[in-house]
Image (cartoon, rainbow, N blue to C red):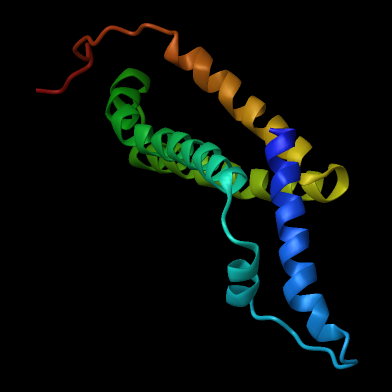
Length: 146
């Protein structure tokens, strides 16, 4: 991955130096729009790999959020939950995302984005992998109200 990142950085530096810095030599300062900067840098192999990794991460996170809709009926039955309890269970995921987002952002500022991304993926992925290894057979609710 380091070689891919270095190639992308070299390519970006070359393109920006050749196309943007030459315009600076006239003495004036010209700002480049975000779209123009992306056109100058281009999209390389590194960007596609990064998109793939972060895309899978986003999908994993979305699946965890969607699983709550499958868990709530069982949790209600097994744990005798009220509507308010179910609401808090559902909200706890989003509260955790909000607080976790701030925590990981601060850590990224302090330690760097790459280290923080790897740590957050491990922190999120380890419990997720552990849960996938558990077997819980489907059984009818013993407290079902008829």
